[in-house]
Length: 396
Image (tube, rainbow, N blue to C red; front, side, top):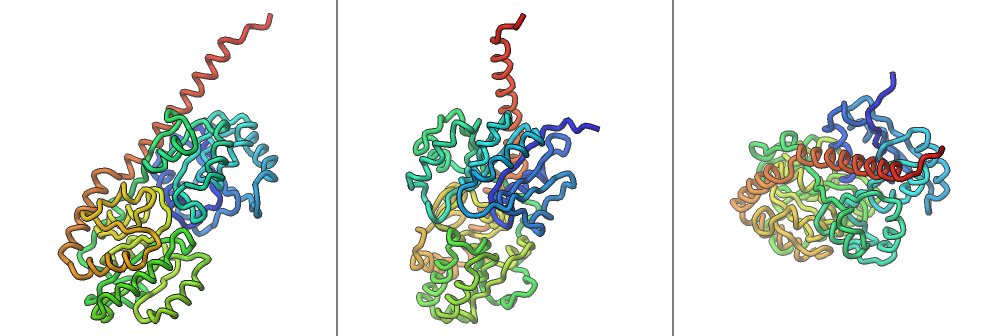
């Protein structure tokens, strides 16, 4: 039997642990199964362990194993795939996957949506003109854009030159039932810091340059210099795997922090991890609308975050957390010292952060916004195609 549900192909550079990818997981798992079919297409690899987070059995995963450099060598293969699969929508995400809109256009895919989730360490504030130019070059092949934050929306319209009518801002949402406050700090399996008398800072994120965990570790060292007595009870947990693990291990050793910093590696039990923290810290050099921040806020944790990307749209400085400059260990360390010394403020910030997530960043609202945008964009393109057909003289 033919499946008449429209097909959406989600194109990413790599489908593995990360905030962007976790957003796709949340979106597909929450979308009504009778609305759209989904295929996740990674230009490099779909990692099986992460793919298992997709709960729908009808979702397919395709890996193209792309090597270094521009993906033009993949264009013939992408073209054939799009022609064979006949998707209604190809939805690319971030600059690394944007090039796939070209073969999608040539293959006649009706709607090509591009999502901008944030920048990387090589362009942390979107100011590099080369990458603005590349986005501008690809723009004729894109039907419409999704920006995950107000700052990214402004970047697309002001820096790249995309017409505002082509851009829709849709913020990430969080499952506030799965991520919920615990009754006191809970033990984390395998953690050396489960003693209830400790005060635990924590971060969750892939160990890569843009997430800048080196600044966090240095900031923790600065905090202990500011508050020497805190060494007896302050601890730091960093959750995540990635290419910088060995470098960060060496940094912890060099700074003499091995007794109070735990690099926990990659874990899938993030709600449990959040329940084992007192304060959540995000040291990124660039962000869109961060899933990990939303999850931490939903878990009732106060936030210390760098004032980059969409972080300022999530964290109300001084109310639900503290915003500090990026790549500034002394300022981040001072913020850590401030919250360590004010436990009542920690609890109040956590309560307000949870309330903010419930009011403005629900997962259902996010899914509804994507469904509306997909439907509206498909209808608009169908209407344009119908109008063009009506203007074609009949051949008699």
